[in-house]
Length: 283
Image (cartoon, rainbow, N blue to C red; front, side, top):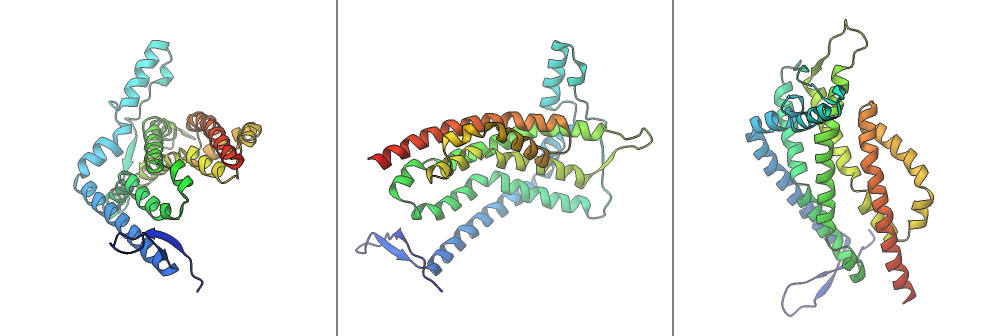
């Protein structure tokens, strides 16, 4: 087995400030980072499991209630502009359970996913703690605040999706009919899958500026390349939005708009990183 070495600070007095880590040392270090992340998710999942009523009534099932924040805001806006179609009404959606263990398994699933979402900053911190010792001093300097930025982008994406994309998606798919003879009785698992998958997908896509930062830092991307391929990226984002959202035009447009904004932000970030990198190479 080949030996993989990196350095890590040794806190023991009288010893060298750095020591080499073998391949097995890395595995052992990674194991404990994973264990701590899993423990954090489990603890948060237990808390979410206990507060079942709040999680389901106030969060998961809230988008179908007429007093949901987005519904009230859109209805108020529709009155101002005189476009009644903007006023959503998801209260007529019937959610049913068709399996004996369906509600219990859904409760378990949502508790775990709540643990992952709430614990995402800590999980990211553990991952970064494992990666950071292998970085060079200059790389550590420019990657400061990575965990905070990634956490903010992820949470922003999840909230954007939950408050805007999810209710519009529910409204479109919940009221769409191929015939009046076919009623929409949505299963609990289908509803939960839509809410969770859309929210998580958009949260991950909101990490785009971070990916661009690191790819530019290692020389894979350049600002000129991003600008040159802006029109192609628009097509890619349209396709991506069609993949990560249910097949309705409203959700896809609402995904594309912030992603285009993120892409422009990524260009600005890449431009700054590229200039710093060129200065370092010239110096």
